[in-house]
Image (tube, rainbow, N blue to C red):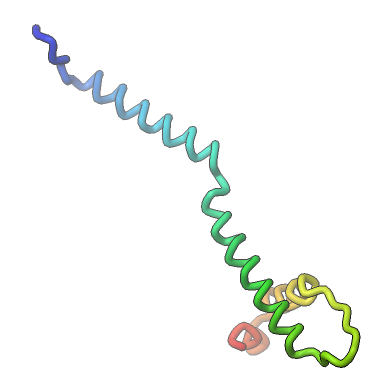
Length: 91
């Protein structure tokens, strides 16, 4: 036997086990990485909606509104809609 380790099923099984454990630890440590992209997309869309709504409102009057509340109501309407009412999602 030389300096090159013998590759047998025990070594391969150990290597695969370590790789699986490493992957599991990473997924437990960072479960929300994928969600961060969705949250960023939602935040950007809410900001665009708020500024578009503000531009549409009468600028000669004082207006106070909560863009998040309006956006939340539309979200609840969309998810509560069924059948023909669900056309609100196409607008």
